[in-house]
Structure formats: structure tokens, C-alpha cells
Image (cartoon, rainbow, N blue to C red; front, side, top):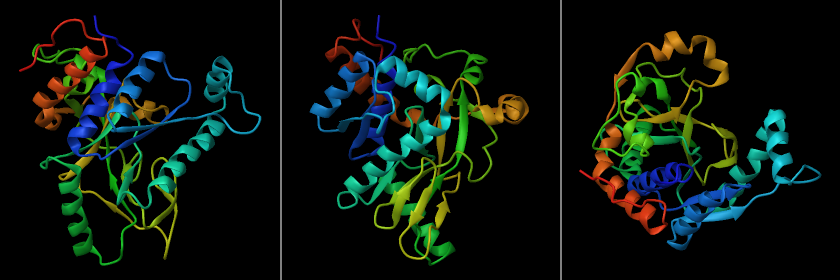
Length: 276
């Protein structure tokens, strides 16, 4: 049997690789040993930069206390998250043109293009045509791929069940509101401080984001349910009106091959995965 804890990390990292990410910067705050094994594998391969993370000051760094502290004090959790976001930015301003902040249940997927590089060439040109002012960030709009949406239609026999993102191809027809729950490509020469969803401050005459048209790309957000703030409207706005979206299947063959190979090498997959 494959290891359920480490599999999403492998699928997510391999998809980022196929999208053309040069490197993934991750921060280790008391993760599961199997996840550490996966991350060390990709670090040795040169694709992941892994940094240990502790809470600053007199905040608890004993695993059981840290988990409870961050769960019960959401405001402090958000403040602590700003440290790795901006550390990643400052470490990479001379190495990369763009940085992207993503959670492991999210992917920015081009709709009709194969890579982030080509996507940015297209959206930068569109932004310049719309307005000549320099753009500090390029925002992908959020759309939900909830578990219940796929469960209503069943799963695909030619895709292993542990490949969560490849299996879940039913999403909400409606996007969340413009500017809500977005994730961005940030220009490292223009943004100054970062939040999870947008820049806090920028160099020059303020921050100017460009909303990537949804026909070019969007943020695929894989969750069990909507975020807490949207629970009251989730059923009518998102769950009852779904569409099949197989854009991620563009990478299906390579993703299955690469993921199963990595899982076998790490000893998490003990049978040969079916690949088609």
C-alpha cells in the first residue's frame, strides 16, 4: 500500500516541475517524518530548498504545544506566516523574475498553454495592452475543486486513487469573487513585502496587480469544503453548479510516470502503478 501522508506532496511537487517552476522553497515546521523523507529527496535532486522553521520570541516550539497554539490563535498564525513568505522573497530577488506563494492544495493551471513561462509571456503582453503602467503582481482567480464534486461522479480506473489532483476534475462553475482567495506571480523587482494573497507594499508608486483572465489560467483549489467564511453560501454558489475541467490531464502521462517512479524509489509504493 502507498503512504497516504506523503503522496499529495509528490503529486504537487511533480506538477510544479511540469509547469516549469525552477525551484520550490519550503519551510519545515514539524512535519511528518514521511513528508520529510519526500522533501529531502527533492532537495537532493536540486528542486526543493528546505529550511527549518521555528516560532520566534517566546512562542512555543514543542510540537504538541505549537500545533495547539497555532490552531487556537489564528491571528498569531497569520502573522507568523508572513516571516517565511518574505524570507522567500528577499532570498530570491536576484535569482528569479517571479515568485509564487502557494499552499500544497493549490495549483495555478494555464487553461490552454503548457507552462508558466509561456503563460507569463501572454499575460504580461495583455497587461501592457490594457494599461502601460508596470504591474507588480499577476493574480490568478480562485475556483474550488471540492471532494464532494468528484464523489458525485465517481473516480477514474486508469488513475491511481492516491493521485488526488488528477482524480478530481469536477469544479465549481462559479469562481470566488474577484480579488478573494487569489494567488499571484509577484515581480521580485517591484514588490517589497508580501501577504499570502497579495503584496502588502511595493516599490515605486504603489502596488498594481493584473487579474489574469480566467480563459488564460486560474487557481485550482482542492479542498474538502469551502473556507469557513463561505460555508453559508457554498452549497448554492459552488457545490450545486459544477463543470468537468480536465486541464490538468495535459500532464497526466508524465505526472503518473514521474510520481510513481519517485514513490517506488522512496519505498512508499510497493506495486507498479498503472500508467496509461
